[in-house]
Amino acid sequence: MGEAYRILCVDDEAGSLRAMARSLSLLSDLRLEVDTAASAADAQALIDQRSYAVLITDHQMPEVTGVELLEKVAGRAHVPVAVLVTGHTDIDTALAAVNRGHVYGLLHKPWRQEELALLVRQAIDRFELSVSLSAKIGELERTNRSLAHANQMLAASHREMKRR
Image (tube, rainbow, N blue to C red; front, side, top):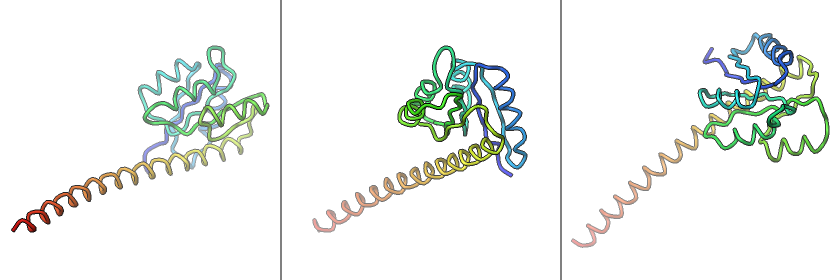
């Protein structure tokens, strides 16, 4: 098995945070490293220190909403796959989450273990695809630079041959 997937859970309610971490620990088929944050500020401090595969955040928090936290995180170099947890199901929250916060999935409180497990597995799959795509893009960029250099060398050689 490879490295553990880092997951950050953010919720201002200590009981919900403990329940989320406990639920994630039950996913024994996945190697997860779970960090928790009781506020958006704590979450941002952790994100400054580490990279996460998945960020699970409550929407209703005192200082900023989960959507606002995800908007701030979205501007970083490494963006985790985001899951928004909400106890309120209104269409405006869902739309704001998807359109503004770069949210992969929504989880309604109280969540069922099966829903959480499925969503986390899908988020990890999405993370793996993103990492793979980034690596492929990097490889293509390096190949393009190499081909551009070879093309320049060929053009220079061609010009030299024409002068002779």
